[in-house]
Length: 341
Image 1 (cartoon, rainbow, N blue to C red):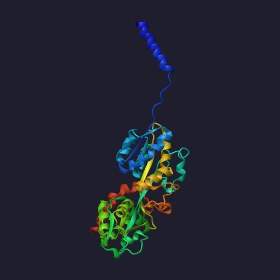
Image 2: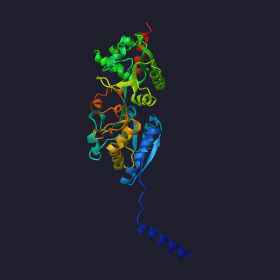
Image 3: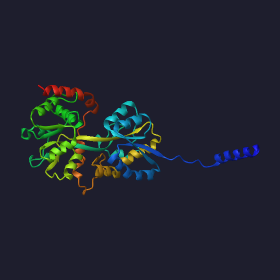
Image 4: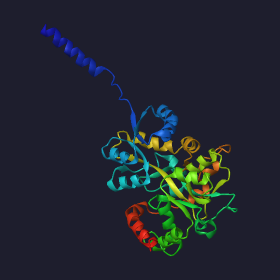
């Protein structure tokens, strides 16, 4: 009996040694926010999975979750916000993006390359919306917000929101200051608040949309996604313009974690995301503009003009996000003191 068992064990061991090794299934873990963003990702994922024989596992959550999971080594590729990408860079979470392995990086707009570790994968922007029945000529500057013609008919985002903070920095730069000398910008924002022009400085975008629908708002900043919403609701009198000084971007970024199990597949995925096919999918499905210059938007796409493109992309105004985050509470207090006098 013992000899039989020994013989069987030996045969099994030899069989295991001589059998071909079964390849481990390839799996790439990629973060996403869920919702329509994930649906677009899923709609194009099959092409990557087939080409690289690698299954994508979606890691769904909010932006801060993506950073936490990157720290824990639970993701390979992180789709995120610029602020979280910057935070990850400081912590040393990302590996450098290899241009040799990501040839589509050569097609990026120059201002879509944030660093060797972070690039923009798609972009929306905040534009200047206006009621064409009340504002006869398309506005060419953010300075229109201060015109006395629009008393009690201007709407902007609350001061703690990025577009309004960016406008403050832009105004500081145009009036002798800058992000490190914000006072000229705060002076301008205080003047706007005291002018009587503002019908609202709001935190909820749906309220801003409603004010344009009821024609209480004649002029104001608005994300292009909300402009699309207005057009779909039949607000044909609401138009938009991109001022000469530039618009304020909404940015999605991408990074490869140092914990990536298959760095080569991760680099290939970033290259795939920057391909015209994927870039156009996000543009037409989500209204997020391509960050590469070789992804033309179809001429028959209904909302083509809402996508920031070409020279408009190059004029995106993106002040230092870290400095804004570090200083916004202090700036808010200063502005409150200036407007309470």
